[in-house]
Image 1 (cartoon, rainbow, N blue to C red):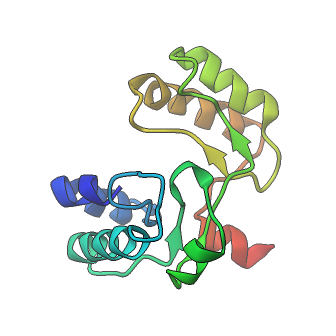
Image 2 (tube, rainbow, N blue to C red):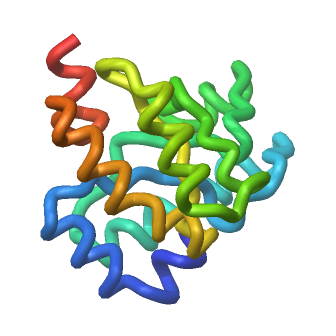
Length: 147
């Protein structure tokens, strides 16, 4: 979210340097009203540009809620997900990891939240297991370019 980018630009720069793609996810994750859409997008785009020197190309709408008015308010390409870990329901790293590992399919975009320490704790096991199964992890832009 843009407010986190503005508060921790060094984290965003480190993420980008390590090969991650930075996308817009709104300023503070509201249900987007018509009056908020443009402001939420523009503030976040500006924070990302200030932190990284680059404009984002992708947007994940809060709650995955996207309609024609949201699409019309931005030129960014929307990103949704194929698998929801439901990590907000289970604060158990083993359960989050098992959900991903048992349901993973090639080319999946997985929804997992870094606001839950237990979800962050699940990531090493997810990466280890899926890498051992032959999965490779790429940016959304790379994935879209190969499909």
